[in-house]
Length: 473
Ligand SMILES: Cc1cc2nc3c(=O)[nH]c(=O)nc-3n(C[C@H](O)[C@H](O)[C@H](O)COP(=O)(O)OP(=O)(O)OC[C@H]3O[C@@H](n4cnc5c(N)ncnc54)[C@H](O)[C@@H]3O)c2cc1C
Image 1 (cartoon, protein in one colour):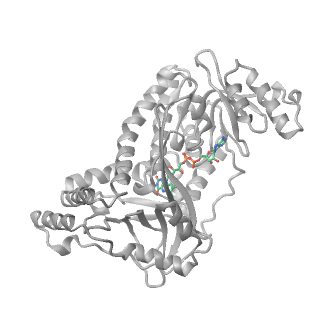
Image 2 (image 1 turned 90 degrees about the vertical axis):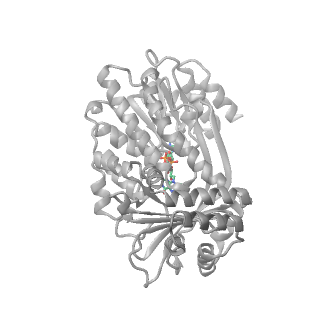
Image 3 (image 1 turned 180 degrees about the horizontal axis):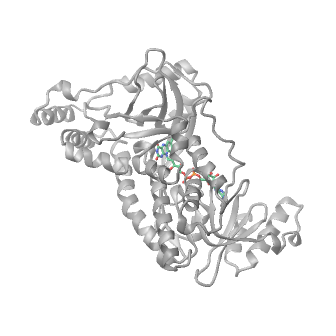
């Protein structure tokens, strides 16, 4: 019934939305009266960003530091309580991201990179990705590209860096515990405004509403765009791992494709690494509850265990290496450092899926980050795509403001969408394709993917092309 009322509320003409939802709240809480939600609580902003995660907060920082948009009044609404900040002397966190060169350039352009640099991050100098059913592998080194493969940064540190920029910005206001309940978008942004109501009944209007509210975006639902989504029925298990006293120069990212999904180690310090282990829901839950020593054994085994070989694919990989004049040792799998321990309470699981909105814009609204697209973490691209949305959207809004377009003008916002689709769709299809290819041990598929991986390893121009794409160059 509640859901029905909410759906009905967005279909009503302007003005009614607030009253009907307030009625709903009063029914729900039994305390509120319609009259107490007076018009004086309804505030207007040029731009409202719904969702203050990594992408929404970075967008707010980027809008505030763009000189053409400096006169725009921006509101950032975040459903969660206020961000508590990041302690660079504190323990390492379990949520980290592999951040590519383009994203680092964005942080530099909004003067947030120095904040991260002064705290802590780990450059990845090399990467090895390998199979479990054959000897196929691919290795990347930073000297091939004259820059690091990626940087591993804790999510809360990124948030801390961009949050500091937003807090200092005179034209941006942040409201926490501000969960958007319903949205009403205009048919025509030339004459009408976007409106929204929070769970606590407060209402706002704006020229442009930006949905940065994650994969279950309320803004996207109201935009009425088609969404293609898949539940991978897999979880990503994260944890902070101790490599022990013997570890040194830990600067390699390791990823092995197991029959259940990829397991990856990302360096944090010489002694610590971060784990992203994508596996079946059942195994993820089991691994999360294992006693620490058993968990560490299972993890070490995952990197070293011999899985049933696909002989034909193995022979094909060897033949390919011989054809390119490499001997067996040149393309031999290296093994990651042995894991010695898992940090207490650092294990957590996240559901994995694929989602893509058919359109990122409509009159009066636009989507960024996971609200528009969500991908498997196997290539470490999800939030990097979100940061590239931020760059394209700010460029588009600045150009539009300069040329005299209204902020919510769909005809102008479409330019943002086109740029994003051109960048995001090939990466998303590539990542989804890899997930699909590696989700089976059907021999012809193993043969095909092993040859593809080894061919890429043997052909530096193709390898560099892939790597430059992943690095955001
Ligand atoms: C295990 C794992 C590992 C990953 N590793 C990488 C990696 O190495 N590199 C990489 O690029 N990507 C990685 N990703 C992907 C990356 O984490 C996401 O793409 C990124 O967090 C999305 O950020 P976002 O701000 O768009 O969305 P979210 O993080 O979902 O943030 C949305 C925000 O909106 C708020 N919100 C939601 N609804 C409302 C509402 N109604 N009203 C107000 N606020 C609301 C939420 O509280 C939240 O703060 C990984 C993902 C997983 C699961």
